Length: 392
Image (cartoon, rainbow, N blue to C red; front, side):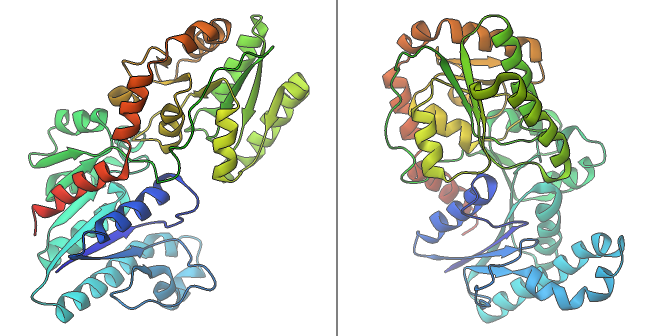
């Protein structure tokens, strides 16, 4: 039996994004039958009705155990942020050590998500306990953080010491190798789409307006403000288009987004629908009823939102980064523009709106079907299974 100790900062399987990916990977690995996977969550509060699991349980919320230890530090504005990593380290090390003591003849290994936080702590624990560590890049690890001098030390620490590093795209793998920070194994594993997402196929339905859709919410790193600017330029250039955006709002800059949304609504009235978070099934229906998916992100690892739009076979405009460079660069109905280029984004949006019937006619059904097969959970499990088998 192999015990896989998964360390992650957050765990909201129903929220989508990285949290959904971690939960899916844990479930996939546990299906092998010879592994027990326990997910240790550092920062997320457990649901109010969640029972306290044993060490062998599927999810252990370290925040619950951390609360009584941190009570003096919580009284200070600065003390808790400085101490929480030490507390996480002590709690995670104790939990893994206890599991090793209970099952000394079994194989134990650590899988972490987020190099800069959980990966950094997991590497300390793995080195201390003498067990393998597989570090998986997540979130901003190898996009924004990789270009931030203050974030690079923990990334470098993990890349140099982890037994295996998992990246989410060929772009990330290339950056890691070009940095000369790693001499060991690096494997790229694209996200898969959960069962049930790959239902239905987009079909072009001519309308008076072209309906543009985005489900990334209102976030700086997702480039929502660039989408607003590109939409203004496209409509100003004569494009007949509407825009629907759905998703959460970046909490730190909520006031900015409230002003930006109000200004766009005042300018375009019913031509824009700026929704908040909506259920995944409604997102699926929204995509199928729209004409064009536009996601001007600054950088991605492997976006589930972009993959879902691709899997439906609808026209897509996005930035040339992350997983799209691997899986969509050859698709004629997908336009990729340089990250951060508002002018190129606006030009691509205006041109695609004007030429949408021709763009729709160039959709290669066989290529879309091949992509859908690539995005199956079975492929993702097989790749993760191969990585873990190196240490079993």
